[in-house]
Each structure stands twice: as C-alpha cells, then as structure tokens.
Length: 148
Image (cartoon, rainbow, N blue to C red):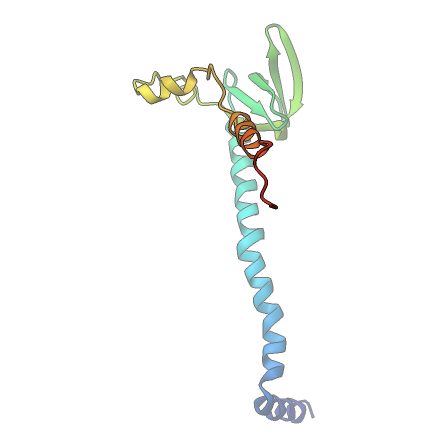
C-alpha cells in the first residue's frame, strides 16, 4: 500500500512540477541561511573562545565593554585584571574582547607631508554665507523689477 501511494505521488508530481519547487524552496532557503549566517557566527565564537583560552598573565587586553586592562592572573573560568595601577578586578574569561599586540599598537612616524598637513587645524573656515548674501543684495536692488 505504501508503494502505491509513492507511485501515485510521483506520477502526480511529475506532471505538475510546481510541487517540487514548493518543497525545494524552503530547503534551499534554510541551507542558504546556514551558510550565510549560522556557520560564520559559529566560526567567530570558536575563534573567540580559543583566543580567551590562550591569554597569559602580563598581556594587555580590551574587554567587551571597551576597558583596557592587563592580565594579572588566570583562574579556572575567571581572570584577574589590573584596570588601573594597583587596582585588580576579577572577571569571567568571556569578558575578554581582544588581546592587544604591543608591536601592532606602537605609533608609526609618518614622513608623508600630506599626513602632517591633515593634522593642522583649519584657521579660516569656508562658508557659503558670503556668496548667498551677495546674491540677495544684487537681486533686491530697487531699480530691478522683473514684473514690468
């Protein structure tokens, strides 16, 4: 009986073709959603957990809330951070947002002249008010009348 139902369904679906797309479209959308959203998020979470597991005392970190701190000690699932000189706080490891690389964060001296010019403040700001007032004064002369 089950084989008869399957053969009847196959005969009906082969003629229409629309029911196959009706069944296949949600499956394709779920697969697309998995590869676009779920899989990259899981990869980021795994990388974040690995980074949190590799943290060593003495490293500088940035917490997920944006606070800079130095790792003082590591406990089971907690980390002791020095948030200011002599001020130690205990946090869970998940609070570590990223580890600061001391080599990458050193400022680089720029020899480019345009970079030096970009840091200088503008002494006279440019405004459009001068041209607008000049246009108004020219168009509002008493001798000019466009409706004559």
